[in-house]
Amino acid sequence: MSYPLVGAIILNTNRKEDTLACLSSLQKCNYSNLIIWVLDNFSTDGSVEAIYEQFPQTKIIQLTENKGYAGNNNAGISAALEAGVDWIFILNEDTILDPDAISSLVRFGMSNNQIGILGPIVYHFDEPNVIQSAGGKINQEWQAVHIGQNEEDREQFSYPIPVDWISGCSIMVRRDVIEQVGGIDERYFYYWEETEWCIRARKAGWQIWMVPDAKIWHKGVQRNYQPSPNITYYAVRNRLLTLAKHQAPFRDRLRVNFSLLKTLFAWTILPRWKNKKSHRNALLQGMIDFYLNHLGIRRKIKLFE
Image (cartoon, rainbow, N blue to C red; front, side, top):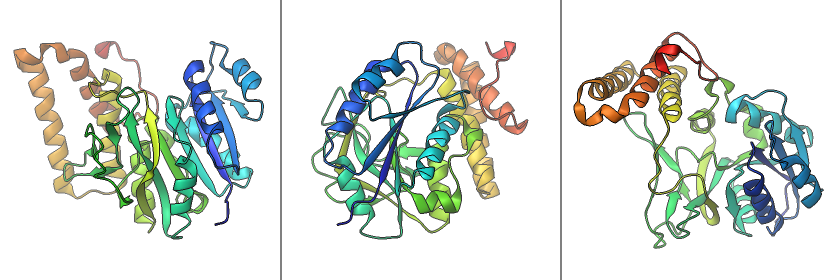
C-alpha cells in the first residue's frame, strides 16, 4: 500500500485541554504521512501557546474572522490543498482517535477510486462501547439521522457500509472531491454543512462509506444530549436551505414545512411544551431567516431574545 499524504484539520475555540488530548491521540496514530493544522478561533485560554510548546510540529492558523464550522474549516482545507495533501481529515477538537483510525480509513479509501468521503464509527466518550454514529442517512422527511445511534456495539457493524453522510466530528475527504464539488458551503455556518457536502459529492458520483475498523470517541454529544435553541435554529434553517439547494420535490418541501409549522403550533399552544419557548422562537426565526435569505451566523433579533 502507498501512503498518501493526509492533512488533519482541528478547529479550536477555547478548548485547550480537549485540543491537546486530540493532538496527543493523533500523535499516537500509526500513520506517519500526516500534516496537522489547528485552526484557532480567537482563543483566550492559552491554547496557542500550549500547542506550540507540546506539539511544535503542528501548524497553527490563527483565524481573523469567525465563519463557523463551515467557513473556519474551509481555511484549513485551503491550506491543506496548497500543501498538496491527498486526503483531508476534519476533526472536532473533542475527539480521541484509535491508533489505527487513519490507516484504516486510508486503506479502505485507496481500495476504490470512486470512494470520495469516509468516516469512522463514532462512540460516546463517556460510554466507550456505545455508538454515537455509524454514518448517517437522510430519510423521506429530509431529516439527517445517525445510523446505530445509542446502540451498544455488538459488532453489528463489522464491515464498511455505504451511507448518505458522515458526521462532521470526523470526516475524511479525497482531494479530488473538493476540486470537483468545492469546499463546505459557508452559508450554513454551523449544522447540516457536512450533510450537504456529502449530498453534493454523491450527486457528482462519489461514494461515501463508514469504516468500522476506524474508531473514534467523541465527547461533545452524550446519550442524553439536549440541543440548545441555537441548534434548533440552524437545524431548521439549514434543512430548508438544503431542500432548496438540491431542488427537492415540491411535495417534500411542502411536507417539511407543514411538519415545522405543526411543531411551531404545538410549542406555542400546548401547555406541556411551555418550556419550549426559546426553541419555538429559534424554529420560527430559522424559517423566517431562510425565506428572507438571512444566512451565515444567526442574527440577533429582540423578538427572539
